Image (cartoon, rainbow, N blue to C red; front, side, top):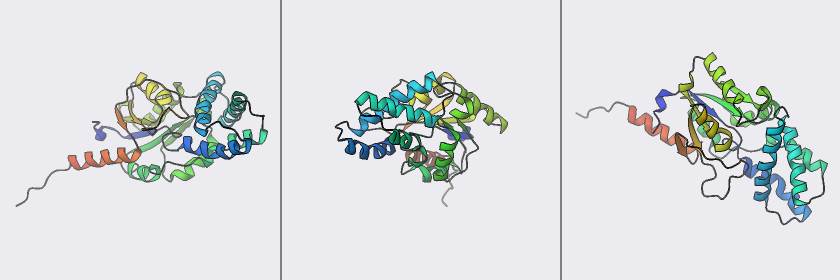
Length: 247
């Protein structure tokens, strides 16, 4: 069990951890699949998207995320033999601010913000993240985007920038808890850099890895939801309280 009292900053991956991008993307593309009369299931589109976006992020790390999405959708069309549709590609590129949080996200962030400073390390652009932040309803000490660092996770620049921002506020690397759903993008690089990591296994009970890529990594703590993380923190808080003797 982690000693939560040793940490001052809780940093998050955003999409997949706070935002349910798997479900949001499927809801976006399902009407398109119906229009095309395509037998391809929406979850296969999502897993194919994971491969396509990784290709563009790693080969063109300065490409802004909406363009990554646009090019990824065109790759998906080619992969499944669909006709190119510029309207769908544009809608896919603009979709990030409409992706919805997990049901437990906002309430959990409200609780956690009373005990930790919060930060975000995200593989999107600043404009897309700005739309998402309106839904999260809590203040963040800082955010780091792919646009900020001209790199995509699992590259190191996000983590270096986060540690610099933390240091500006008197927070050391040992006082940071990095929390994420993607072992590929976050837990594995966090391990390499000596960060304490929490894996939020958002896809527990589901097949595959959704919109992220598979990877092997050993987090410091595994939970299935942010609500579970909150419950663990509450239990630790209770355990640390002195017990009054009954007379």
